[in-house]
Length: 102
Image (cartoon, rainbow, N blue to C red):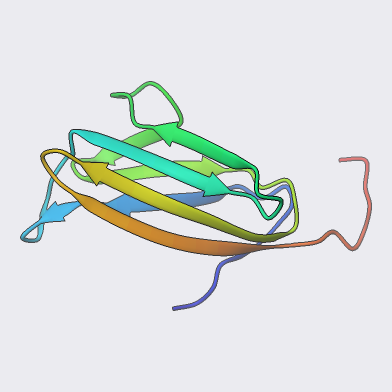
């Protein structure tokens, strides 16, 4: 697996697919926790179309992160109810080498 490397200012799309016996399935509840290198935590819950987690199609969900600090970012998806799943991962954000006004 190739490690995702991003820069400050990039948008990082995190995707989670939930299946039961290979069939895409929607869970009763879905949350995502995203931890910045500093330890700051962002908690997002799927709320049926409202909120930070979007549903792309049955069983497929995305969250768009806008990392604002360099270092290793960690995330954990957790689904429960009608379909249970969990997935953890990380991505690396490079530090700025050139300071800019943007």
